[in-house]
Amino acid sequence: MARRFWAARANLRAAALLRFAPRCRSRFIDGGRLGTSTILKTEAEDLTKPTTWTAPTEKPPLVLKADLTTTDERHDLVKLERLEARIKQFKLEQRLAPSWTRQIAGPSYDIKEEFSTEIQDAVNKRERAWRKSRPTEHPLRDAYKGLFEQMVFEASLQEYPPSLPDFRPKIRIVPPVDLPPQYWSSPPFEFTYTNRVVYSDGIVPKQAPGCSCKGNCGSPDNRFKCECRNRQIQASRTRPNGGPRSNHDDFAYDDQERLNSDVLLRQDPIIECNSQCGCGTECQNRVVGLRQGISVDIFYTGLNGWGVRLPERYTNDPINGSYSPQIVRRGELLAIYAGELLRSPDAHARDDLVYCHVKRNYIYDLDSWTTEKIAVAPPDSAHKTVSSAGQRKRKKPRGPSMTPEVDQTAFADDSFTSLYSIDAFSMGNWTRFANHVCEGSNAVPRPVYVDEGDVSRPLWVFFARKDIYPGDEITISYAGEVDPNPADYGLTRAQYIERANRSREEAPPHHRCYCGKRLCRGRMFVVDGEMLWDKLVEDGTAM
Image (tube, rainbow, N blue to C red):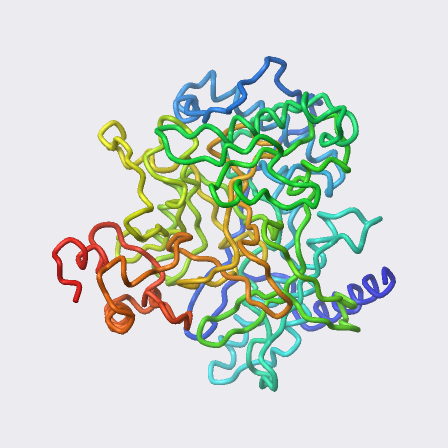
């Protein structure tokens, strides 16, 4: 199997370099949409002075607090120097470590060195050259499927140990059957594939505390004294400003590495063991931190573009070899929502200045509903944003039972809605292709803490909301986790569908939903301010 992997890699790399030149401005046109591949650029770091990255020695609280002093420190020259020194220490340690042992979240020691864009640049250069020299013709694109799979495979080689090739998730591209060779046989080469969360300039990682256990934290000798378990119990009982928690009194995961049902339902923060812990890889509280994930097919859905599904059986794939179908059970890990971690104002600026023009984005705001100062919204309001004409769209739940009673007057400043956002436009993994459905979604995001000790910077991780079977598309909901119910608005099913169809017609084209569900809302995103559904309830016009 290993020989097949390396032979395929060598053959496809040779084909890519023979066909395409290696430099370009990384632009693409697909179906009339224009986009740019924006790769993070960093100044060269002086890493010649050896320093040591050390964990804090003071005993931290059971429930971590958001580091709300970061913004002030950026305006203090002395503190700014300290922040830069901490970032440099972190980068040095990461640079010296084997690539598959680097922390999942944190600054990159060198974007250009750590993340290759050779294949993307070659494909995009070719596309640009064709548009310039032969504007009325299209190049042959049937090889793009293999090149995209090769791009993913090479990225995976950097993130998983070479001694465990079967541990790497298999990502296969499945274009439409009988596709003409001039059509795209893969998604656009607009991003760098990674399963990590890369911090933007100036964001300092804050090491979380570990436990003193040896072996498996779930063993009888460790379970009741494990510090990480105690932090999980506290997190499952505490929510600032009220609201339900599961009150679960154990690890978030069971011995099958699945989330406890109540933890999953109540959306508790998940506290995992980390690099500071004394336990080993056999610990039941290590799941996301071990970079586990599932294999998927990225396939073309038609009207909804590219999506992802759980693969069925296949054999003799040039890149991925063979795959035996598996059922993903409720509560199992799917993948991290990977990308760039930005301060929310910076993410919203990208949204307003760039993404609103290309009519799509991949930004998730990390609403810090676990912190006292910024807990102005329930966890369901963690939203994926899309902007058009300066108006913010948010992923929110709809329905009368979803908003807890919270004193909003103390938090009138909207800037406290979220501190950080994750943007998967230029860097990310297969989760960026997960499509929205209005009802019956089978994947949900949950906040997971591994090495990051700042509560406002969780890993945003997708888990199975229900059992997922081979061939099932993996879907999420931008409108919360409560399926629509016409009775909530005083409507019959027929009246609801009529209103939803009207909402679809009135929505901007890139907001319209075609999920095909019986109770499709007609649009994917919820606009700040009054929506059709709000008006139905408020003015009594529901028929």
